[in-house]
Length: 150
Image (cartoon, rainbow, N blue to C red; front, side, top):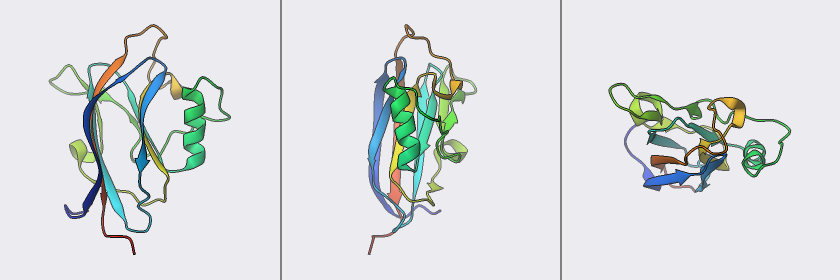
């Protein structure tokens, strides 16, 4: 996907996430009519996971877990965008990003979309203890609409 389009969500900020919780961006407009892309880089000194949900049911299972309930299942989010942060070579940081260090990746499914920086034991991909320190991460997230909706 090229560099054109309208940036409809742009977040560049530090977030703090308590253990067994998540920072969630819920205000991501549906791109299914217009086409679009997402690009992100999230960095922290602490291991974390990123989940991108493109369906309401998957997110509601995740949200239920984060709120302390036992969901029926633990969906992994969309596989192209959800991942465990990896140590960044040459730095004392963990990083999760879209392909090639944060390039745009097309979003080819209907919303609603939810983007989560996770500091919990969801799916047991990253272990977090109840009394661990909060996660401090820098989030650089952009959602781009390809063309104006009709």
